[in-house]
Length: 275
Length: 81
Image (cartoon, rainbow over all chains, first blue to last red):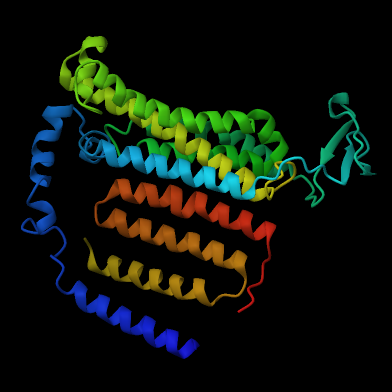
């Protein structure tokens, strides 16, 4: 059976390799992909949207519908993860606490707790890894800069590579880094499960709401030049600002989805203890 | 596009891909898959698709590797086949 599947894989690979011979060569101006609408985007994007990064202009303006539904797909993936993995109402059977001054570990069996805000005990995970001061300090130093860089990537997507997707992923990764370096509960105290769910929905709402606002102002759906009436700028500038608005929406939705997937995956749905 | 650089990266991509499906340690697989994504990111960057490279680096090499590690942490580290 293994040999059979290997033969099939090799045969399909050979067919694909043969087919790549008919591809237009790299950067060919006569290839089908660069003859229809691409020249229009390349020549007119700057004067129509005042966005120097043409990829961003195409992604968020000319092909706004695609990006909106891509964001919705990511949201749906996060929702599917939560529905599949999340377990409600399961109490841990045992807990471990560490006395902060002496480092003595206490094992509590049954559904009993030591008040965690007492300042003398710290809750630790069952699969406990001794906390490492180097990792904690480095991550504590690193996370603010990561988040600042993520905001830069979102806001500067007009001029340089980047945008909502990348910035949102980096923003989510900074929270995941906090969960890895401290523990999952610390990150859950900072950004709660409900907040994450609300943020994911809010991101989609910002995107589709910007589109709906364009209809209300007399344009087509996602035709940002209609926003010029309330933003008091020229229609070209309004398209640039509309792109920024939807990029922020994408960033918020992607960030929240990444955090939700990680929280459920790392704690197998209990959102209690995890990596 | 420099063809020597292209050839080296492509060879490493194929090596990584073969290693990912043949290594039995799933944590190693996750790391190798991150390396594979990063090499693909280099390939996009060489071809001038910087936005795609950025997405590949952040999503493919960054977050998806972390998801794999989290899944391995909650399941098992050894494959059955």
